[in-house]
Length: 151
Image 1 (cartoon, one colour):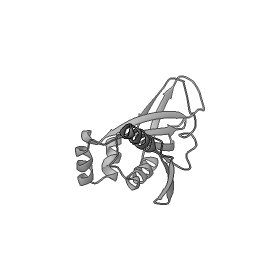
Image 2 (spheres, rainbow, N blue to C red):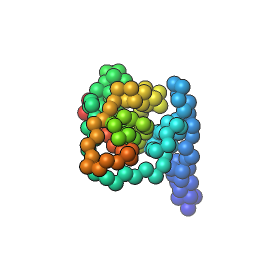
Image 3 (cartoon, one colour):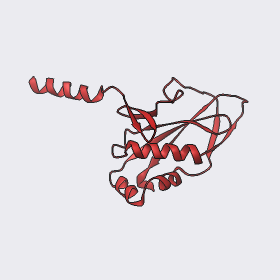
Image 4 (cartoon, rainbow, N blue to C red):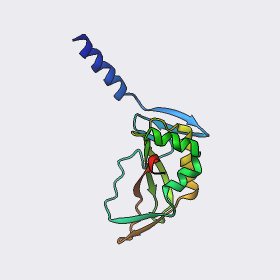
C-alpha cells in the first residue's frame, strides 16, 4: 500500500504543477506542463472559438522559420529526441499574427529561450492569407505542427 500511495502522490505532483511565470529575452511567459503562452496573450488563454469555415495559408513553411531560429546542430539533436511543437497562431482577418502559443507536450528538449526566438521570428516574418465565405471581423486560430524529424 505504501508503494501505491507514493506512486499516486508522486504522479499527482507531476501532473498538477501550477503554471509559473518565466522571464526570457524581455518577454514573460506562462509555462505549464504542456503549454507556453506569452503573458500578454489574451486569446490563447481564453475560451476562443471561431466556428466559421475558412482557409488560412501561411506565406512560408514553418520549416523555414525553424531553420532560421535553430542551428543545424540543434535541429539534428532535436531530430534524435523526436521533439515536436504544435504552434497555435491567433490571426486577424487580414492574416496578421496577433498571438502565438506553443503546445510543448512532445518537446521536452526545446528551451524557453528557443521558443522566445521562434515567437519573435514568426511575428516578424509570418503572415497568412485568409479565405472565408463570411465577412467576419473575428480572429482565427490555426495550428501548425513543427516536426523536427521532418526538417
